[in-house]
Amino acid sequence: MAAASVSANHFKSKRDLRWLWLVLPCLATLLLTVLFTQFDLDRAISSQFYSPEGGWFLGKQPLWYWLYKYGTVPGLLLSVTCLLVWLSSFYRPNLKAWRKPCLVVVLTAILAAGLLVNAVLKQYWGRPRPSQTIEYGGQWEYRPVFPPGTPGKGASFTCGHCTMGFVFLAAAGFYRRSKALAVTGVVTGLVLGTLLSFARIVQGAHFASDTIWSFSIVGTVALGLIFYLPEPVEKEKSRWSYLHRFWITAGTIIVILLMATGFLTRRPFYKNRSYPLELKGIKTVNIQLDLRPEQLQIRYAAGETGHLQVDAHGFGWIKTDYDQTLTRQQLGTDLQLELKIKAKSYFAELDHALILNLPDTARGQIDILLNRQPIHP
Image 1: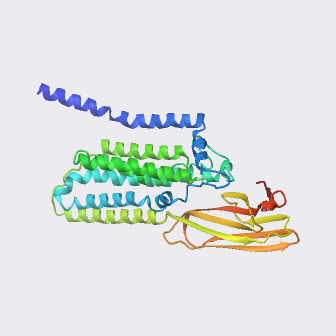
Image 2 (image 1 turned 180 degrees about the vertical axis):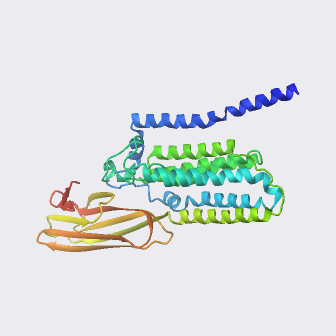
């Protein structure tokens, strides 16, 4: 009896230290954030993948573009699969042992990736993306992680794509049932999450610290659920068991529909159009549009003509309806360009960048205005 009491107290003492595994990663992330701010590491890293002439030159390479479009799909499939196994465990008793680890994965996806990152931090932290900052051709001032900025003015903090890679870390909850499955899941999370992080950095969509925080949030939430989510208790069979299963099934279907809707409304969107410009005798180019662009770049190259390139990008339905038109009007030596951009379907986020390509002979000879305000190359 005494031995059993000592063993129980020892086990309880060990369990009481679990909070350290939650606090230490948070403290490490805060320390890294201080170092990133002190040594300006975010801009130092992002600058390696940007040039004034080529923009974010790695961003559209096949691997990184594929990850941008489809890199979140594996995490969604994992979450839905675990949700279906969790539901099946109420119908098949041999699956009961898998109920908690599957629920850990699902709740990590919902709470960390869905609620904390995409619904709260990205929407309200107000940190401009690298491509939106002045250093990289954008219109807004750079902001470090702290303090938060104006809600809606940038959705850089934190990285939503990365969380759907790191969500595989929650597979650590399978360790008691299958060490191989747990290790495979964690390794997949580290590899896929890192690849998605790098993709978003080289595309100018996130700073490195954004991706670190995504890793920390997902990892901490997953650990908290593994430690403190209670093991399932077998419900005594009764005449209410069918009703109990009915509500669980209905709730699962609703959750799957919400997850699918959230995924479909945040599908990557990209559209590029180029408009030729006749610049003979032109002294001023005035671009007019309702919304300021995310960035405006002016490039010079050999040739006699120019063109205006419009890159529209963001997140919307899996099928988006978008329209843009450019009206040209020459008044003496002034070229008036009126650009109209209109979203005809739902977009969770929509931005556009303008690239004005001019001949070398126009350097210093043509003034560029945006909504009648001078723009300096």
